[in-house]
Amino acid sequence: MDVSRRNIDGGYAWVILLAAFTLQFMAGILAYSPGVTNIAVLEEIENDLTQASWIGAVNFGTCSLLGPVAGLIQAKTGSRITAMAGGVLTLFGMTAASFCKSIPALVVTYGFISGFGICLACNVVAVVAGNYFDKRRAAAFGVCVAGGGMGLLVSGPLVRYLLNQYNLSGALLILGAIEFHMCVAGWIYMSSGVYDFTYVFAGICLVMSSVSAAAISMVREKE
Image 1 (cartoon, one colour):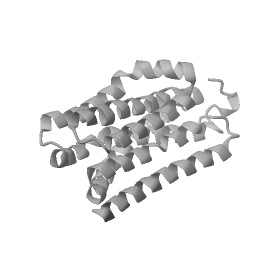
Image 2 (cartoon, one colour; image 1 turned 180 degrees about the vertical axis):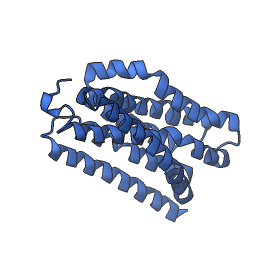
Image 3 (cartoon, one colour; image 1 turned 135 degrees about the vertical axis):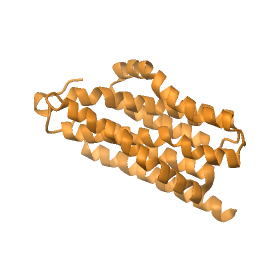
Image 4 (cartoon, helix red, strand yellow; image 1 turned 120 degrees about the vertical axis):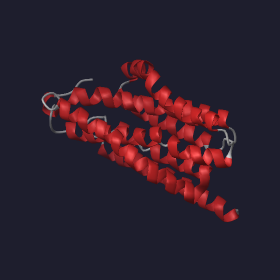
């Protein structure tokens, strides 16, 4: 990745750091969410704790084990496309998971597909922050890691609220729409002259979140 010297340790590097923090924050929310959603899986789908635990195990395992694959993809396509592909994959996986009625199906969608999505996002965070920082590289990586911790703190209360309001299916659908905002962070990895396009993508993501919430509300009213 070509980075002009004026953007090293300053300038647009801070925007990139914010994007990296956001990616890690989103990844943290989803990676730690199975600890809460498993309760709903046991109540609404199948009361088998051993099988239900495979959802979170596959999700986190995929995120970690497929790191080399994510690295190859990033080397071929670039950080921007890789991060945005992670957002799209996560949206697809969580949307499909919201329609699943069995644990094996959730393992594939919620576990593997969404896990690979956050794997792509996390790999971008690990590489790009180092490209934009030299003297402050250690602090930059610390900020990125803090994003994952912030996601961990938010994940529990957020997922619990969504489950209380929309049950398992609706919570998974809305989580997918939330995670789709990784595409906005990924788009920011372009040069600093593309703010207009960034606003467009941010608008699309907000619309996706609103449509998801509206769809779930309509379903609840019919019930």
